Length: 116
Image (spheres, rainbow, N blue to C red):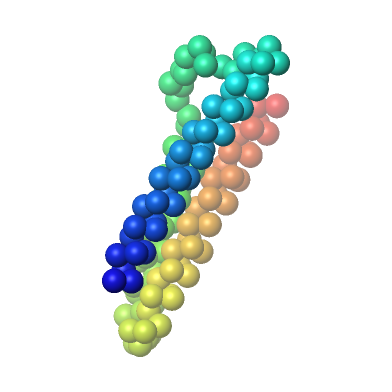
């Protein structure tokens, strides 16, 4: 009976969070309208390309993949116990994902400095 309650509680919390966010967003827009500020409701969203976002996610995925490969070779090569293997996998995934994001930052910073 305990697992059913967990799923029900998670669903209720997620639903409450979505409705809470929508409520606060509506409240914020109404306050902007009262003050005479355009809340940007009529403004169409342009779908402009975002190369830096693509670069960031691409390097993050490459980093996660490299982290998984390195963790696999580490676990298999060092004959690590199966209980300790998930910690190594998560550690390498986080580490190489972070390295991917840092590389993305360096590339973006270098490009922005060249534009000045």
